[in-house]
Length: 372
Ligand code: F0G
Image (cartoon, rainbow, N blue to C red):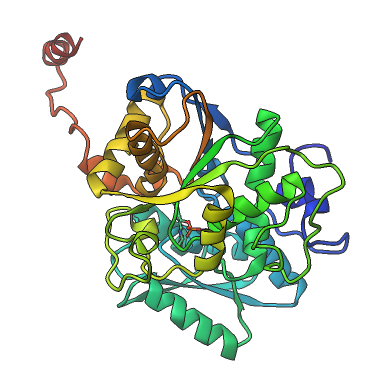
């Protein structure tokens, strides 16, 4: 077969798989890198700004990159069930890949605090959905305890295979641009993704990172042919109500409208700090209004609809452009982690509401004339 068959097939020489590994894939990865044309002008940025639209993965978020690896390795090891805690997207991906593999998935989600589309996905794919009276951090603690006692594979990003899959985003970006960008901006929640991006960029230049060893010696570091000569400066943005990296330690009652990153005690704390420190980058935070403003601006000036958490990357970037922290003329890539359709309630709540109008030509024409 010659058509694209997912990131494990594409990058098998850079991933901990063998020819006999039973690959579980939905043809994830290979997402578009879209150059923004209007937004940079609007915010007074004179460089190139491109978005890697991870919302176009099979379940609508970047989690599919990690989940193809985690479920593949779980099946290879003989697991019949997987478990995760989630703010929504991980549960959607776990449920879908478990369905694909014909195994059982258990997902723990914070009651009432996940976007509707994500809940629908987990339910539709047949996961056993446990809505807990607690937040993501409570769920994370519980799944770690349970998976250490029962024969169930844990597929949160503490599972090293998750980061292995997610690192492939860096390979795709470098292939598309011919080189790594100058800056890479992304939202930070549990902090696995920023760690995985950095791992991918480091492997692409043949350099070691603190993440080396995280894969327990499985991954082929230092490829013979480096893909890139530089690594980007990594900028990680959090929502102000859930910003442990800005506060210097865990936050006990995280809250933000960007529910995907409503996390107070990130698991990949040391790796994320290493990514920022080794790259010469920084963490920053954005308020909920800033996040929603960025989400709307992107949708209305570029035609790209991402979920609120994903827009945190642009909200942070816009703030740093304004503050003069981004080098003039730089090439910047922003990861848009999930699709806007995941969270229709938040989108509808912040937009101009539809006109309610009689089904009559004159009434409709009047509105059109007013809006032209
Ligand atoms: N953006 C989206 C859309 C997410 O779903 C997440 C994490 C992040 C950003 C942050 O990535 O955790 O690697 O720093 N969602 C997880 C979940 C926690 O359960 O779906 P991170």
